[in-house]
Length: 409
Ligand code: F6P
Image (cartoon, rainbow, N blue to C red):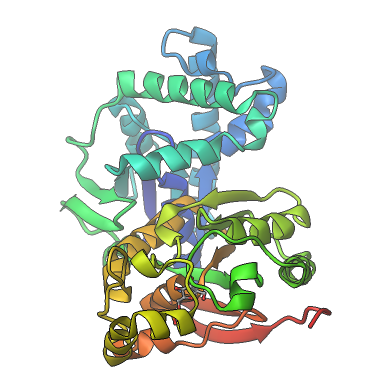
């Protein structure tokens, strides 16, 4: 018989707990382990009819007896559902809640005297990624009656209430502390037989790509003249390409589109998001196009004619060459990698992720998923009338270039 297990998430809001919980649940399910998530936040929103709106900050104050009682009731309801699930067909129950106090964690352990409980505490020390995550949260339906500023203030206050009662994991016999931005384990202690433990460690530290659509922006005025860099806008054909893409993706749910800060990626993403139900655009400076330094805005012919030494040196070793005052593929590597970490952290383990990027940046992104020699990376095919679809999980590996056709030529 396979063992039964309770995984209890721990951590402040917006620290990546639900993303980790979903990743654990989906991968274990793919392994044939019957897994279910019991999410207190979702249950609170569903049960809110009883109390009215429960998204305002004071609901979460430890000094609000009504809020405390309601949240305890939600926790108890989910614990009872999890108990039933495990006594029936279930193998792994994941309690997705902040579980920030020792008292709450003791109740979880007491509810399951016959099964081990593994506490997974999520933290994130990257302020920028956290800030971006908070910003994303303010887009949630439960804040729709607030302005963006009000939503942010309310969410920060909610976090403050949780911080005021936070007790990190110390006493619990089985615990892992995970950095959810870096996807690495910082501490672990396991004092009894925990089923699937090695698998769980793998899942916590592996970045899984469910469906990544890697798109290059539509044609720009600079593209028409073969000019590099800059912040050019889309041409009429570029706009048409963006609309064609929007049509192409209209029946797929794309919750977030990641772009660079440049107008061409934003314009492309805006067209796509207009055909979606609820889609946020998150611009990451890490995905800005390679900076051409003193060559920014020049055509390749101009560079060849006016600065032949640059053309020659770049042709000799394109991956390592750095434009004077600018960047090279090699020097972009770290920032692009950091951008990808943000994507994984922010996407909430949603089914579909889209990145609208640039020629060089998209090559660097692709190179993170493909094993390519450095010298091949600057030559990866990156057209404007196709996009890459990537899917990588323990059971699947898909990598395909998919055409979409714009009517304008
Ligand atoms: O021409 C478009 C562009 O995105 C430029 O902004 C950038 O310098 C270039 O492509 C990168 O491609 P390559 O490294 O092949 O010059």
